[in-house]
Image (tube, rainbow, N blue to C red; front, side, top):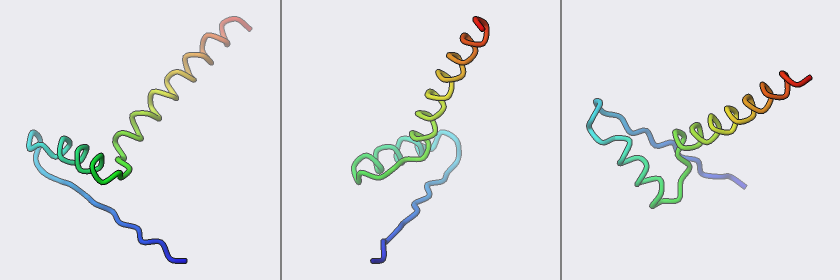
Length: 59
């Protein structure tokens, strides 16, 4: 079975509203939004590293 994959790139100068457009477009079409995924991963890894750092001081 062949899956149809699509990459949509939104570009423009700073302040043009590209982030706002991309977020709303992705939400309405139920698409993955790379910036949102990256932000969630960054928050997760920041919390993991802070736990690891505090464990290291108690060993």
